[in-house]
Length: 291
Ligand code: FAD
Image 1 (cartoon, rainbow, N blue to C red):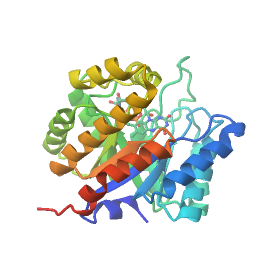
Image 2: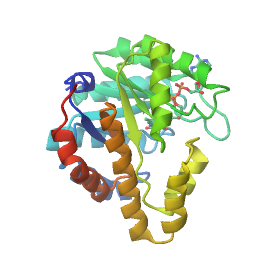
Image 3: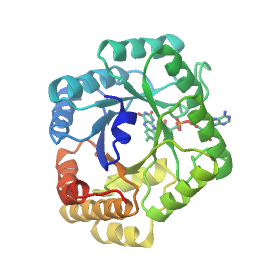
């Protein structure tokens, strides 16, 4: 099923992200985790794409397992900046062969040495090409706090509009920890005439290592309330996990209460975390009535 059709059903959706293994010997454990997450029956599941080859082949494999064995709609990520036209089209053909209809089209991060094949420069080029290559439903990334490379948020918004005009059907946000940032951003989207559905990306932060990584990789700001939780519980793994799930749950309840009803959880391949959040939200999602 196409994700744009799921999003158009007028009810809240809950989806989960998983990432493929970096090495072949970890494949089995990742597939097991992805399968357990699929058994929770989310509205769809996304599978990330390792930009520099290696793990990239596993994306299609895991996406097709989710679909064929568990009947969950998959969203395969695809990055382009470190890729060639042949590789991109090879992946698209594989997706078609497995009847995977949804692609999250991304530029990917520029490698540290700055060297790229210079074929693709921005996600909008990839979106255009996917659109021509077949009947795919295409998503793209967006950044409520601005992309780290952008000189300012307004320019970032213009480039997001280019992605939408190129044919993207929905956008998924980078993680954020303060809902007001998203509400302001959604207002600005409308001012830029960006009217595709927005899926809010939520990261349950459940361990100290994750926090350091988030701070080094993304420009997500941390509200005082969130910092207090991390300061107090980061050295107590069980407490940090419980507090992280509670914080993410609260964030989601506030989003749904304010009619931001499409939620994507960065699960970090943890079925226990995905399951806890789903349980916490069961009545909220089932009982939602659009005004
Ligand atoms: P783009 O939309 O191309 O933007 C990149 C930068 O270029 C931005 O600063 C933008 O403002 C600027 N820009 C865009 N168009 C133009 C233009 N025409 N002229 C000048 N500047 C322009 N990475 C992975 O490797 N694998 C994944 O699976 C993955 N999944 C992700 C999922 C989500 C929901 C998110 C939010 C990010 C994900 N990423 C993933 C990270 C992503 O690849 C990086 O954030 C990357 O740096 C930017 O990708 P993009 O598609 O947003 O790029």
